[in-house]
Length: 441
Image 1 (cartoon, rainbow, N blue to C red):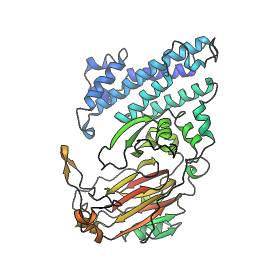
Image 2: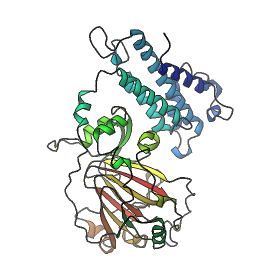
Image 3: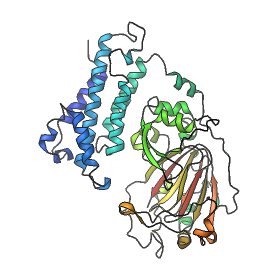
Image 4: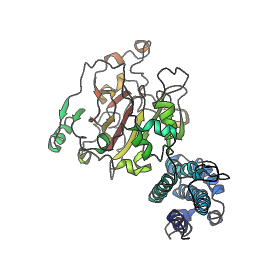
């Protein structure tokens, strides 16, 4: 019997891992460490994990990130190879008891989830340097293999297939200071607007995105399929806002994120925090979702730098980006991005649901009470101490805040918002919401 194509892919991938190129960053790891990659990948995952956490993430040597990545790929291949070989030898879809052969008796339990976990952690924890395409190829081949041999989707998935993301909402604020709105703005008109340094809502710029139409992100069935039956891991912020006490982070499966945070029964009043997939590079992790959107042409203009005399204008400029930075924001109603500034210009694109957005000019900085240095030497000066929609002590603790001038909008599906660099912005989801931010400079 000829080997299954998936087994052939696993073998080719192992050969790539075990024969690094002369300039491969993994060669900076000690030879004694690299030598056990074929035989003890699980041990090297633990070693590389410890090394990664001994540095600030921005300063982790690429060699240790690559070791974590290659060891994770190697261990995932071990898991998949053992199970697929056994399944192919069995030669049938069901075992003697009529059980699904993908979860065969005597196997590793949910080996598919374990393999997905290993590969996703390589991306989330280490950035998978120079291995993104390999990981995507392995996950795609594994998903095809499982779906070909699966006797049907789990019942939980079946219940979701006919559903759309719920976008009912309440607690919608009255808009008194509307940000100007333009429709189908040309590049020439946008470049002219950039010189004003003011925010702008743009309608009609996303109408060609498949995520809004033929491959809708509002479809639970579509999102479940794109995340390998909901098995893919995502980093989730737990809590209403990163400035709240008790805020934390967790890495969970996409299906658990949906069931625990997005699809909760409204009658469930249990003590469960809000969960938010926030500022995550989801499109590097799951490239097929990247095909559902396109970077707005506006992000290829040359915008002005932060104005001198403003907080960002007095700091060293960010290096010029080669390409706009894309991040995903997906969560239930009530998620909050507290009042803060970003070091880039931003086109915030609303794909599902709606958000309330409030903006303050950099000239209002002194009335917004920026934080300072916090524990561990973390510079939080880009975040305000003020809970914008909070009640009670605003006048006592922040007397100047009431005087700060702002503009605001309800950002609806299919609209995008231009946020100039250095502008303070506060964002609250009014419904289940899926947004994409596009940073550029």
